[in-house]
Amino acid sequence: GVDTFQRVTPIQLKAMTGRKGKPAWSSWQGKVYNITPYLPFHPGGEPELMKAAGRDGTKLFMDVHPWVNWENMLGPCLVGVLVPENYASS
Ligand code: HEM
Picture (cartoon, rainbow, N blue to C red):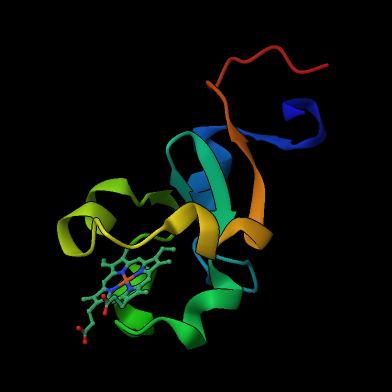
């Protein structure tokens, strides 16, 4: 269930830029993915994919290839779910 996923706030997502030794995370439909392992395989190139780093990638992704199945391809790279900044963590 969802509770086995890490809860990620927008500030945490923003810090995962893929720079300074950190992996690159991007969100898609409320879920957060580590896109770093996929970078070398992205047909559109690393710089394009890196535009989605540290932020929600939905619009960038949908503008270019709405037919690609993000959830399937990045399934193994799922980090957790995006939660509001003030989400009461337990
Ligand atoms: C191409 C996957 C994110 C830009 C592709 C293709 C796949 C793919 C499978 C080939 C599509 C085809 O030929 O029909 C992914 C996945 C993403 C992602 C799984 C998210 C994790 C992005 C983002 C951008 C982007 C965020 C732009 C900011 C492109 C471009 C191409 C492409 C420009 C076309 C390359 C070409 O035609 O030479 N991507 N992509 N992608 N992607 Fe992505």
